[in-house]
Image (cartoon, rainbow, N blue to C red):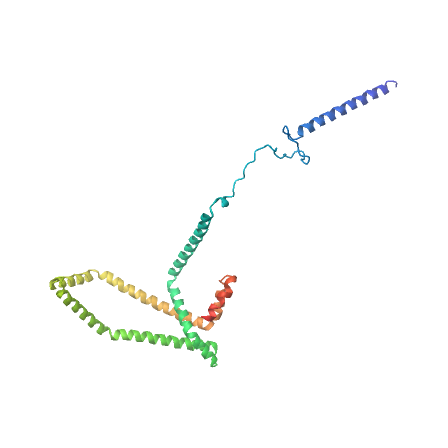
Length: 270
């Protein structure tokens, strides 16, 4: 029992020595984790462990790169802005023209319908004031308008056909007058040369019969397109006369909202 106090004393001293060694190792580890401080530089008191400190005052300052937009001259920037907008506008116009060319017949027919509607719309208003229903007033106006337009077209064609013989005689007289002038002119043109020219012209017409026939067929195609466009114009005119206001209000929905008040007044005034 006498040895027990001595053993306990040695055990306590060893624990104390072990604790001192652990404290020493912790101090060394903390010293290794501290940020490196340059010679002559005073670390910031607010710098936390593990945070990169600010560069020292003697370090050279590096100039920041300028903004690319600010580096471009003002005139070049204006030219570039205007250039790409012009390109977009030109592309839009080109696409629009291609679309109009593809539906040329429809565009022309609708344009003609707008003009006819502008002429016939006052008649519809007057008939409605006389007590006719809207549909009946539209039908009567459309029929009368198309009849008048047809009569005008028939009168023009009739006048042309009536004067066709006179026109042929005048053409022959003009050719004879031209022939006499060529014979009496100082160019020394002989009658045989004129006859040769006429013969060559006749031969050219005879050898190009296929081209002439093709031109005739093309004329038939043009006539068919004309009749188709006429029917489209009549159909469009009928709808514009009957419900033009609602069609105009629907068309306004395609316009941006900010521009609608200014565009909306164009329809009623037209």
